[in-house]
Length: 386
Ligand SMILES: [Zn+2]
Image 1 (cartoon, rainbow, N blue to C red):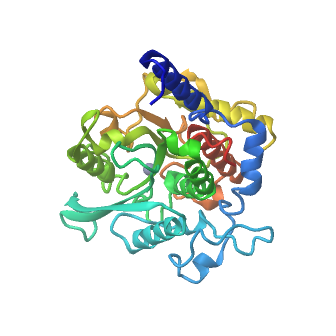
Image 2 (tube, rainbow, N blue to C red; image 1 turned 45 degrees about the vertical axis):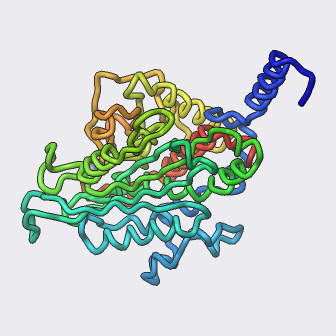
């Protein structure tokens, strides 16, 4: 018991709280150029994301045994290619789709503290090839959840790309569509995990109402026969419906798993040279501007490999009159904020056999990896934890 009046005690408490709030490392801030240099010095995206880099992971046919625990070192002997194992046809229900899922799962199993949710389901599809009426699909979801959030719903920055490839033309690989985005998500998870955990293990991080990170590898984005509302977005439509039905009561009322999504960031058609990505939604144009600012800082710091007059992200171009149908639609129509990172025009190789490793721009793949990873690091407030 102190002799202080309730008013004084209240003021002291308010001061203490204010101090804590102002001392917290900021989330949703930008990394400085120096911090971005430190981040990519310790974990360069190449050669892991180099489309020409071939590792033993593919050669020995044992993809799942190779994991991200093999760290990149100076000699590159231990580098595990993240992109090349994905550059195979991987249509829903195929053997290759299983191989790719095992590779992705093995990667996340090698990272500390990530949890996996496997959303497997069977649904009706149009008849094609030997398939009659129904097909199995599998979405993969990986989460890194902030500590101490058992009684508070976790919020996740949510990155999404589809891992399936189109059935036709036969042999279609879909390097930009969307092997590169998948590999970038694997890279950013691996490179940022130690820094995210460092933030959460610090006292300040534990006090903060931190945002976690959730990465979704969606199945069945492509049409099996011809694009329509029924023949496309199989994985996304299923997952959005499932999460909408998963209700939970919290201090904020009755919410669904869908509301755990802080921001839904959909990556698609990345990896070709000279992309131009506008902002599509007014409500998330702040995120688009943040990503553009990260790109500007990375270019200023000399960390980008492309050297083009105009940036990848055209934040001054908010194209609210254009809607590109993609995995975000089932989430968007349920009120989830979306940032769609997709170039306009689409890459020239779109939906052709030329959408393969040989037609990727290695420099553009590298730069997308550092732009997106640097932006995520800022979003999660990692600047002081590198
Ligand atoms: Zn496609």
